[in-house]
Image (cartoon, rainbow, N blue to C red; front, side):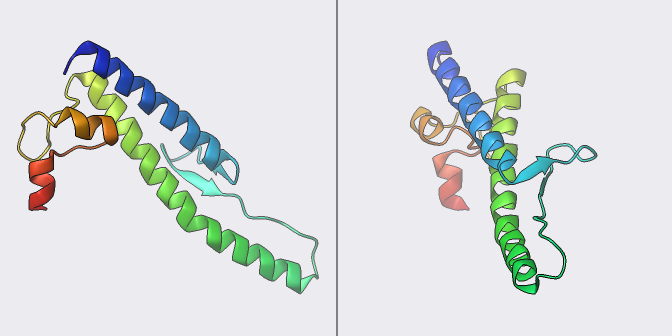
Length: 120
C-alpha cells in the first residue's frame, strides 16, 4: 500500500476513534480497572418514585447493547491503528495476502480480504 493511502486511512481511523470515544462518553465512563472497557452510567432519581425508577432501569438496559456495540467498534479501530504502527496493516489474517485497497478504504478496520470473507 502506498504511503499516501496509509496516511489517509490512519487519519480516518483516528477520527473514528475520537468520534466513538465521544459518543461513549455521553452515557458511559471509562473503566479505570479494565483497559478498553466502558461502563454505562446508571441514572439516579430521587427515592420513592417508582415510575422514575422503572424509567431508569429501562434507559439503562437500552444503553447497554449500544455501549457494547460502540466498545467493539472502538476495539476494532484501535486494533487497526496498532497494526499500522506494527507494519502489519492491510495483511489478511486468514491467508496472509494483501487486503484489497478498495476494501481498506471502505472499511479500514477490516482484518480479512474479500476472498477470505467470501469463504467465511
